[in-house]
Amino acid sequence: METESEPYVRLATLRQLHRVVADLNTARSLADTLQTVVDGIVVGLGYELACVNLVRPDGDLVVAAFAGDPAAEALITGRVGSRASWERRLTMGECWDGLRFIPHTEGWVLLEDDVPQWHTDGPDPRFEDEWHPEDRLYAPMYASGGELLGVISVDRPRNGRRPGAWGREALQMYAFQAAIAISNARLRANMQRALVRLEREQQALRASEESFRQAFEYAPSGMAIAEMGGDQHGRLLRTNDALCRLLGRPASVLRRYSFSDLVHPEDIGTLLRTSAEGGRAELRLGRRDGTYVWVSLRNSVVADAADGPRFLLTHVEDIEERKRHELQLAHRASHDSLTGLPNSAELRARLGARLCRRPQSARATAIEALDAAFEGREAHGGHDGHEVRAEVGGGGEHGFQPDGPDRYPGGDPFDFPGAPTAPTDGPYDHHVHTVAPAADVDDGTKGLAVLFCDLDGFKSINDRFGHHTGDAVLIEVARRLTTGVRDGDTVARLGGDEFVVLADGLGAADAADLAVRLRNAIIPPIRVDGRAVRVGASFGIGWASCGMSADEVLRSADQRMYIEKRSRSKAHRRAG
Image 1 (cartoon, rainbow, N blue to C red):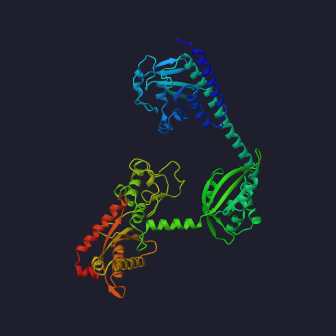
Image 2 (image 1 turned 180 degrees about the vertical axis):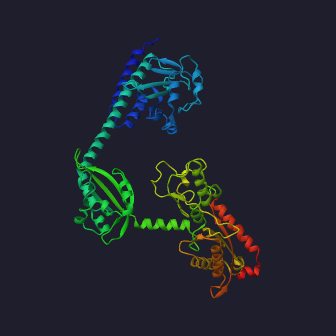
Image 3 (image 1 turned 90 degrees about the vertical axis):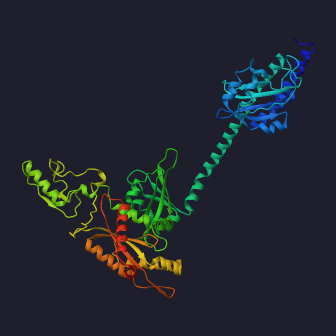
């Protein structure tokens, strides 16, 4: 029931409400508006604490402004509560028209959720309408379209009692006005940002032509503008000084060319595959002196006007030094740092490139394939006059090819029952298989020999004279091995004092002769710092063959090397 002074209280509250609402419209920014909202509640509506929880773009609510207690403000300002927790709160307790009141008898379940909260200790209420320290009163703020803008949270009424009907009405009216003020502040902020952005865009537009001209002309790297479309597509229209210096040609001469006229013949495909918009390519362009330089091309499309013709803007960067550095890095990654020889990884890569998974036993020999072909053809009515020639080491699966690629339009001439079946698993269709010579007799077969070399006596040199001498010995051995092989052969350092030689096109006798020559090249004394030292060498000869892995080939050669090493005394090993 209202007391006699209630009308006067209403009038005083209305004056305070009018004053604080007027203050809302004086704030210049969104942050000022939010702080004015909470300050107005503390000053004009009779609450000791107030805060605004503002909805973020992701839907959660952040404590954006706080008034009434500096300690509480420092603790919870900027903290975030989830949208789900807030929606739970706005459906609990008692609905006071547009407000939501959660008494302490129900609010205890909210003590552990993620909504930032601040409570002060106090005595239990003595009267029914007395405010409890854990009572909660919320005033949701909505935009004109019904979208939740935020929630005003108030605490500790100065009279110590729950607000009556007029107090509730005043808080609800204030929340309504605060929502309008916040929406207007946001609108002003968006308009200000839009105006600033528009002004910047206009300034940038006015300065764009001059900026582009200066950027184009004075760019430290090459720039070019070329035509797009039509008969003159790709023709250079404009080039800057940096590109002219890079290619050694004046701008008047470059206007006669397109990039396709200047590119290295091996890189023309790369240029044609480079898209106009956002395309990138690394290729070589020709200089006036006939040399080529590595460059990086980056394309973009520019328009002369809104609906005007489009041109191709190409940025040309000199990457000659980077390419040289990349080659050096690739060499370091694949070569031994001490001797400069290919390392273990590079050796396995080169060896693996010659091998496939198909075992040698799955292939018929050349004679077997030819006999089976003609036997099968006679069993099916004789041959039809097609001439077949045998090619030793040819590209066919069994060493045979018809006279021409189109001689058998119907398919494989041996495709009939009884013919040897050729696998059709793609990787082997055009693969020249690596074949190992027979182990017991030299039948003239040439193969890829793998010579595994282990130095004899190297450890004693390393231990006696130090690593400097040992490194010098390894370098000299690497030089002697490299000198003793052909240009196409590979000499690699596997690690420690182990070396491997890959020599293609050798028979069994050839490989044995090569091992003897290399051993004889290694055993002469090596002079290091005025001191002569000697090492011997043990060689094991293995053969690469399809169906084997690189590790299996190396393991086979390693085992043969140890057999050869054990078959000789230590004195003989050092002597070679």
